Length: 169
Image (cartoon, rainbow, N blue to C red):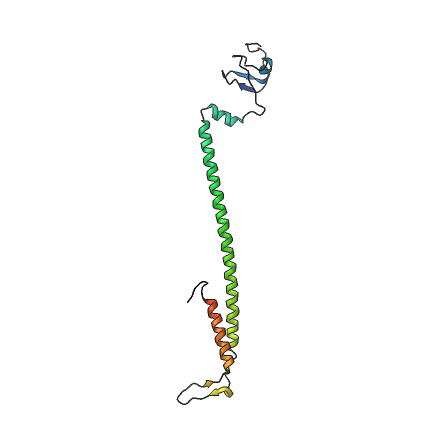
């Protein structure tokens, strides 16, 4: 083991000793049996060196605790955004279900209205069904009791469909 830096210059990546911060290359490290050429401390070279940006930040005084705190804040924000996105998705799905229910209700109401109009058009409005009541300018029309009951039932069904769900009016 030698404590002097070799004089030959070889092109290689430069590293720093963790103890004395002396600069050396990988070839120097090999020449000194894996130890620092200046202080003699054994140096373990990581298989994958840290990215230059992180090394520069750590060397320029960036506190690892600050970095970890910032990462914790970023993770918390990410989790909050995920929760908000999930809530929006659930809200959207429930609104889609509500829209489908309303569309089905509209279809039922349209069908009930069509039936009511059809029934109302069957009113006996001809001269043969006309009855004149003394003192009344408008003629009265005779209808069968069953037809009147059916018309009233149809009106009640159409009215029930027009009430909001859960209303007891």
